[in-house]
Amino acid sequence: MVKPLPSLIALRVFEVSGRLQSFSNAAIELNVTQGAVSRQIRALEDELGVKLFHRLTRKVELTADGRVYLQEVQASFRQLEMATAWLRSRQQHDRLHISVLPSIGTYWLMPRLAAFSQQYPYIETRIHSSIEPVDLHTRLADVAIRVGPRPGQSYDDQLPTISLTMTTDWRGVSAEELAADVLIPVYSPTLLAPGTRLDDPDVFRRLPLIHTNSRPDAWTGWMRFFGIPDQKNPRVEYGHFFMSLDAARHGLGIALIPDIVIANSDVRDICVATDYKVRSAGAYHLLNLQSRSNEHAIAAFREWVRSEFPQGLA
Image (cartoon, rainbow, N blue to C red; front, side, top):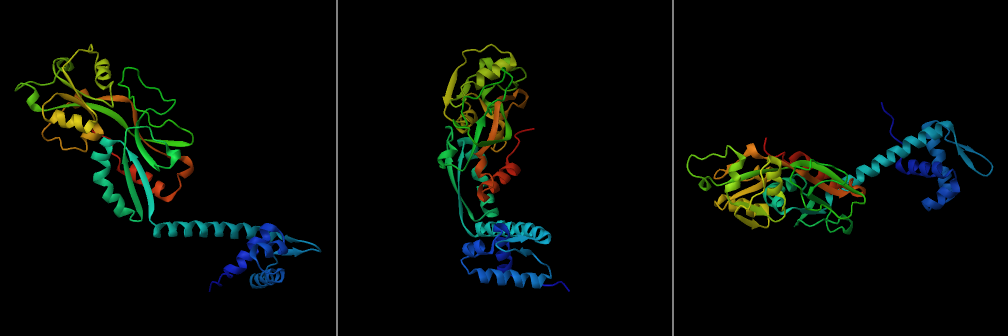
């Protein structure tokens, strides 16, 4: 039969006494008398059948067994503290402020947010949509999904560049890459004459191009990658990718859309020219402060995003 554990009170008195190497100082920290500390330690030694302290004239010292036992007791208290903090966090409604790009928020995050809330009902989410650089140090956002190159990363200079800035203050920021940014031409089948196929990228020179203001180098970089001289095509411009996608759907021209948006859109009435996709000089990243990575709500969202974030079109 397994013997019962000593009382938590006795173990706490032992931990404080062993850490401070003093019964009198332990009494001050525990707000009890020195005699009460001494009695708890004596009772614990009697229960264990082991001497834990050497009583010297003006001080106490841990025995060899006492030093080993102190390390194990302290480790056990740390585990209890962590488990208690975790359990309490589940009973509280943590508030998580998420800053996300408009198109990713519309096409990817919002349709899935209910599933996250079902999995973590005690985490209350607040969504902010923006393409502006996020400043995580202000605590206005706890996590952010942005697109761009990480500092120090280099890309082929033939690829379309991303002019967006993920953050202007990288101090202590963790940037985890979620997926490459891949642009694909999309267009309405009504844009081409019946029987016409985009079997040559040079065809794009004669068609109206839909530009997205947040990616001014998209079409220029795409033509640079395919070796097509930049032409003065008829053009229309929209502020965000979801607007450009809708314009392409209505036959206003060809739009370059991230495959991550296409993969989460209804494209039954639109043509997707996957043969002419090109990777941008950047990727989608999840940003958070490294110092806050272990906060429960942030860690839960980070793990969920890793498993849910799509890798675009094959």
